[in-house]
Length: 247
Image (cartoon, rainbow, N blue to C red):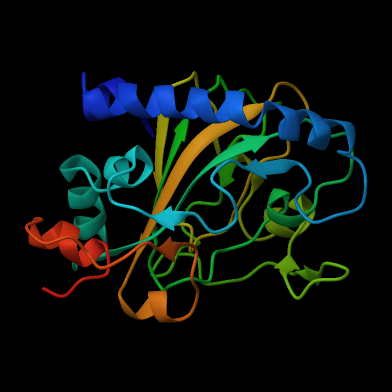
């Protein structure tokens, strides 16, 4: 965990992303209000609005892609992965308060996109323990010291396997969990092949930007965005590869 100021300094990309997230909030204010009214109705992830849609366009000109592919982020991703990595996911999430029981990603789970995963979260709101922070069980990632899985259950109507706090605490004690609280501008870098949960908001709305990097092989299994055309020429080789091009 760090801050946007410490990681990016006075990067103009950070200010551009902040303005773009604000514009999304304005553009989808009506949809957010409607979802808020229907928050307790049955449905998968009604508590979360994906402001870039379920499958955004992989357009290298947008700030949402350019922010992920700036050298600071891409170098960290490549270093952690130990290879040139692909940009596999990006979006802006608006999480709404709910009084219902935890469901979906609010329960403990691990991402199955790859053996190792590099994911970035950037908070655009202050996030306390009541505002749906990311909670992580350290050591449960691929190659971590904890090789035991918690007991799990299959959510009704889905194929997803989730674990409760009680089940997770039998593997990693609660006092070892990392709860990523912090003010607007908090940055979390995490391997989500490890057990984690988030988005259970009981207080104020949570807004964040996120992007994910995986290996080339992992992209063949699942697609999170639509391509708008071929990879532009003349880019750095790391960026070209991250966008799906060849080295």
